[in-house]
Image (cartoon, rainbow, N blue to C red; front, side, top):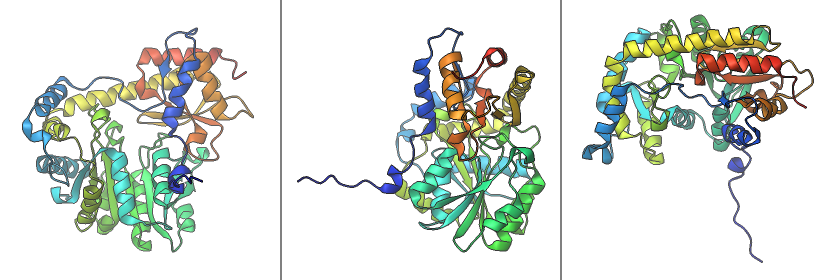
Length: 390
């Protein structure tokens, strides 16, 4: 008898990636209501700046970018980005405290591996970004839920977090602006979590993928004060520079932690695209006005989404950056069924709350940044006229 080799049960137990599942729902829509409107996957709803495309093309054609680069990332990019972050946050950070990664998901993989081992735990506010849950589960690290409630603006509680800490806890993850809820964590709340982590000997992992869409950047005192040695900050260049296909992210960590992160990046050998690294320094330094115009455009889309849902029966419980977390009006119906039916009946693609953890079957995530103002208004019209899942 032939025995099939076993697969890693930690990987096998992880569900199918939710975005791929939602994309498959497209096939059920027959186009009766108009063009399909995708508000599922978070992606910039406008093209990169012409200079970014030109820079990518030029760098891609250079022989040097076809070779291996420095494992922590291109030195010029680390230097320019460090200066940018220092000015943005009012914190004395240096290039030696940064590593460039293949996107922010890889940044999270690296820091999770650096701070926790199998059998240990990281606190993750729920509803959570599903890739965080998937990563920790595959590593054998417990993603311990820190529940957040609509009536509290989906903000995590420091007291609730402290009650969940035990001798297996190694870190607390915060995501702000949050994915999936859009909740923006106040500066004081982040500082309170930094102090909690310092007091309890934990790491604070701060994922700020969508920070460029905040009207006012919070000065991060925890990056300048005594808690600095306990903070790892993650960032993605994908959204602000409209380059998700180039997979570029960054880790800011204490200098003594960087060599350990570099070991992980070297072992995984998933190298950030060198053409993107070569292009980014000029984009960071020269495209501030363009990034600000994009921020205002996304803010206008947020306002349009609020106006589109007014009076529709759908309730926005949280909104910020790219996302709105919305309570549907169909009591007793699971949001997974609502999302499927929205795709089938209206051609509106969303992600249901259950994709982001247990206990959110009344909510859907709308990534309104994907659609322009006209398309958002059309979503409102379709929702208002819809009678719900059959």
